[in-house]
Amino acid sequence: MTQAMRAAPPARMSYEEFLNTDFEELRVEWVDGEIEYMGTVSREHSDLETYLVSLIRFYIEACSLGIVFIEPFNMKLKAGHKLSGRNPDILFVANDHRDRIQKNHLDGPADLVIEIVGPDDPSRDRVEKFAEYEQGGVLEYWILDPETHRFDFFLLGEDGRYHLQQIGDEGIYRSAMLAGLWLKVDWLSQKPLPPLMDVLRAWKLIP
Image (cartoon, rainbow, N blue to C red):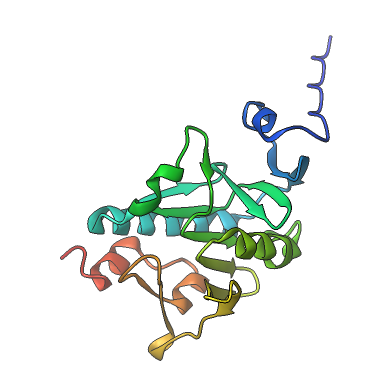
């Protein structure tokens, strides 16, 4: 006898129901009461995500800046009249905003969100999430595409709009929310990625 297939979750549910539902292996987000499904990630996506979160975790702990989370930790935002519960690939919360951290979600915007573009829906990060994060108050937003080697960095201006940041001398981007952290953008497209220890030495965090 074959095992009965697990019933699919309802197409609509409250945010509280979403947080308390076991989706098992499914990658899902909550957008204004509806469940959105996401595809699996590529090897390049997984490699870059684990690489960056390792670097960022070391950096923020060394500098006592805050805390970092990875998918599927959920971030609840209000963008205009729409509510969303997104699972950023990486999100950083500064010490001043630790009160937003709840047991199983972030109640409000992260200070920095990093999304790595997935092949299943390239427009999701550049269109839908871009608008939600902008309107929801995420202060810094990175959109990284390891397959096309396009890496964009945005800061939220006083006008409430995202502004694309220019890459500085020697191809370096300097984060606004992670004070003092910088990256050579070329690192993100190297195969293999630069050794973590080499980056930490460049940052002068280890001898």
